[in-house]
Image (tube, rainbow, N blue to C red; front, side, top):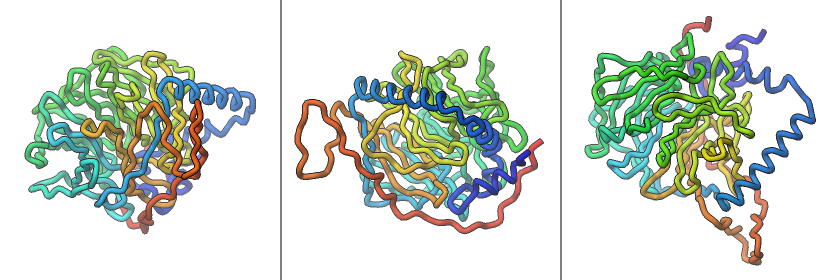
Length: 406
């Protein structure tokens, strides 16, 4: 039987999370690797590919031709992965915090206005960390950050005030366990909710809600299987929360939805490969939650998926361009720009510091060539994957080792 540390050795290369952080994130990924590649049944694979092809065709008919466009900000944060990112309506900007650059954990704060990234000097800031998460609480009008890992599993709560551009640490009487990779998302009632995470020994299935000064544990009648590092986002039009994948001891290869009262396990006709540390955000233009990338059995992905709430299924979006495969990227919908923004992440070669936006449009993005001829049914011209910007290739450094798994 392959042990956790052996899997970490197999997966970790320069540019991946350091072994100590990956030890906290990769246990279920190891199990999925064995399950995913055990069967080589060609008919099943062919049927699955055909299903994806039909889904992609349906997506083009329903949503037009969305496309990823790489931006060229006048300034960008240093390359990193497993950062925390959310849109802050109070400042009207995307806020990004921390992450891992392969050599150290980070605690810098940046904002993106659609043109440039700006580092924000704050009087105080959360300690450096990776694999924390944050989301906007529309009731308190603050961004809530919780958890993460910096050699220690973290359970502190910090609030970002977009009107003062400052962080404030809170001291709630109750709070979730110190975890890495929790899922934070807006509750349909506007509050910030938290589900799951990994505390160094066990994956969690508890759910909490931030009330402004304290955390309150929620007890839905049904909850998803315990997990961490799942993709999650809230459809702000319908109030439905969507969660997919992640790392777990019990199979996380499933889709769950939350309506503000309880969770429901969905049975979509098509869904992505099981991924962990994928990125997700709700796009009003596409009328659904967008999921991008993630790690899958040691192979990073760059597919783009859309959760169709009406059809209760996943639809793979066929885009002419795409960010390179990655995991641990930040994603948020920028209301001011009307675009989903993606930043950073990592693959086996290093960290990224590129910025991308997802354009939801009824017509395809024109191919950059002077000889394009208009046709009744536009067909995107195949192009190579754009070359990524230079990335940091980190060198290994000693990190504290988390307690061994049971």
